[in-house]
Length: 314
Ligand SMILES: [Mn+2]
Image (cartoon, rainbow, N blue to C red):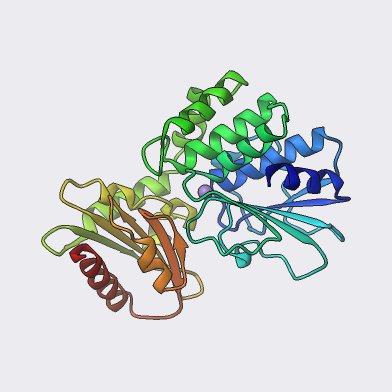
């Protein structure tokens, strides 16, 4: 399959690589790594991301400033990176073939080819295996992108199905020029002040349920406005609540500009992806999420706590 997918890309006239909306290091890193190697192979490539703003912590990734917010007129192959559903790509229907590169257990297999490895910690690992299987040399730029993808999706090697293979691949990427210290300082030590203020609010206002085993926080628009925090600043912030000793799972409910809510679920071990699926969301066993329309956030919170209680009892 890896050979066939690579050949399809080499045979294409114009390849559209797509990273998902509200991008993270994995989607950008894996897409940019592919962008780099396909450019080097002499291909016509566009990297498309339908987000008004890209998180600046990834601005050091080679090719970051080449990411386009507009679609080219024509393209015959779409390579989707780290997207579990087709709607995350934000591309209209058309005459093209989709190669779906992902690692979400909830992936919908929407591609003509699906390189989906759900026990991999990141889409970056799938891209690495694709390149390795086709003997594509890993340049320094490519190594930086893939290292960032893998590091970012594992919380810098803290969670996900991290195993020997993860470190074997990461070791190779370091050998090819990725600098772990430099990448960590770019991604992890450039927090906006607004995010730290949001942490402050969260630590003072979170709730505990079910004998202190479930922690929850609700961010409404007023809090985001007061702290100046952006949607991206809330990413993984709830992990801090999960880290409390007796907490088994944590929930963040974030009010969207649209009036709907984004919900992030985190657990130490419970399969919260199951709950996300009930709300038509997705993700991973211990980190999942979904979006809902207008509702009462307190009722929504209690509903989710109830579902967590149910799966904890299994
Ligand atoms: Mn990912």
